[in-house]
Amino acid sequence: MTPLRPGITGFGSGAEVDYRTFKAAAYRAAASAGAAVEQCAQAKGVTPSFHAIRMKHPDWQRSVLCNRVFPFIVVVSDPVSAAGVQPVDCPEIEASMRQYGFESAPAAELVRALAAKDLAALNHAEQEQARYWKPTRVVDVIFNWWD
Image 1 (cartoon, one colour):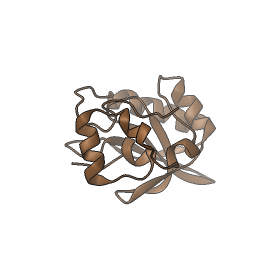
Image 2 (cartoon, one colour; image 1 turned 90 degrees about the horizontal axis):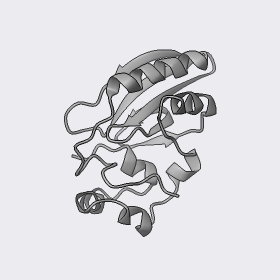
Image 3 (cartoon, helix red, strand yellow; image 1 turned 120 degrees about the vertical axis):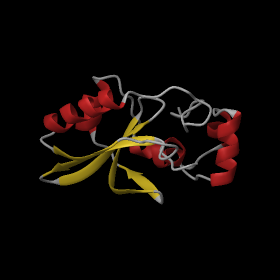
Image 4 (cartoon, one colour; image 1 turned 45 degrees about the horizontal axis):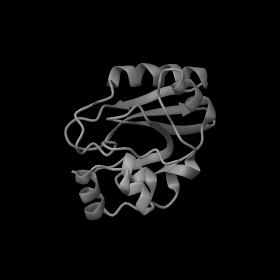
């Protein structure tokens, strides 16, 4: 089952996830994992399609991204860049975020190649954007820098 749904790219949707809710949940998730929040970035303007919070643990450094339209998160290896993100499974962070209403998907689902049926789930404006930007993975649609 794909996490793609109409509006998830940010095109054709007026909805927006509350950044303060995401930030509070991420701070709690970091604390529960023994990590500290290093940096918070609220998406403003057209791009990116997500908010980001960087966490540092003695054994790892990761960022948690939250789609701006749907409460969907992904944990990624740093760095976060327009060239693409690398999802990683981080069950402790994901479980903590789910307690606050955030959804996630396994990294394998997010890095798999896009199929025509995935793009069919998007609205017309998003399908046009996908044709222009040519994303290759599911994660590239949900967490993007399209403008």
